[in-house]
Image 1 (cartoon, rainbow, N blue to C red):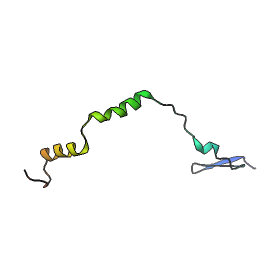
Image 2: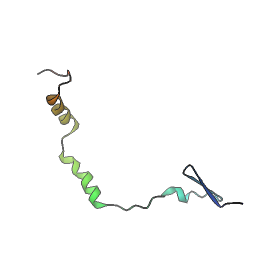
Image 3: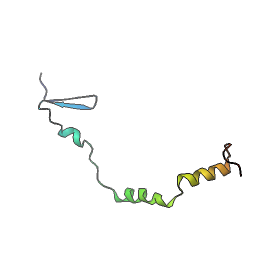
Length: 65
């Protein structure tokens, strides 16, 4: 029995070797709520400020004041 396509380990091998099925196998849409949520992270402390706060809470042998 000959098949026109076969899926093996997530790779689809078609008889005509057309890559269309690999280009976008997921159906998703742009979600403005998620984009807005991710863009609001600018309001939080940067990495250095968080590190300084964590040093105040639990010193790790770093800088001495």
